[in-house]
Amino acid sequence: MLELKNITFSAENGVQDTKDILNGVSLTAEDGKFIVITGPNGGGKSTLAKIIAGIEQPTGGSILFNGTDITNLSITERARMGVAFAFQQPVRFKGLTVSDLVSLAAGHPLERGELCEHLTEVGLCARDYIDRDVNASLSGGEIKRIEIAMAMVRKAPLTIFDEPEAGIDLWSFNHLIEVFQKLRRETHGSIVIISHQERILDIADEIIVLAQGRIAAQGTKEEVLPTLLATGSSCAFCTGHDKAPEN
Image (cartoon, rainbow, N blue to C red):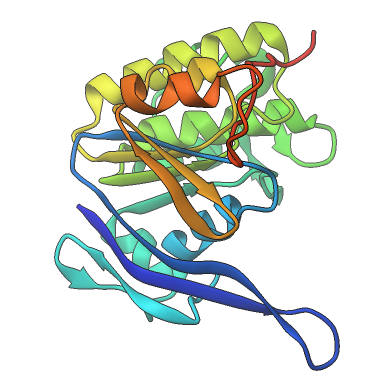
């Protein structure tokens, strides 16, 4: 279980000024829950995801994972404890193949058949990718799907996805929903996704709306989603209707 207690984060905004990005964010992600964090751009969503993963350190507050305070632990230490993070813009690893990366995520060498199965699930023709280097020859959408395959094989107690739909074409996005539904069925830990997409919001157990660095709304999808999709609403955190990735 993940617990955030009164998380604050400030960043430099000029030579002497600082800007408050997060202001007292507290939330709990229970085991087995599928949680989507949404809200307007600049509301602090990606910053919060990075703080949970250990990429950024909070200015104040504490983070507990399965009862252990991990506030000051590095991203490597958190990963060893079972915190997985999928970047909005995945990094590339020169000298490693797709097979290498997926096997590393699994924690052991995978048979070719297993690799093919996992790559096929994220919409990649396995025979064309298994032995490819993870370099600039791969598009942003391809590397994103490979990273999602890595998250699937790892099955970490806590997996965080930062806007997984970014750079994904429409066909792959449709399969992405199926991937998340499968991950939800097979993973007993928590899944936290940063997303604006209605179809991802629609499969959430809980939706958290983050606006201006604070939690503006929180509840089940039945409670929160209608407000987010309301046309002509004056709410400060509405995301609008679903805009699926372009073909």
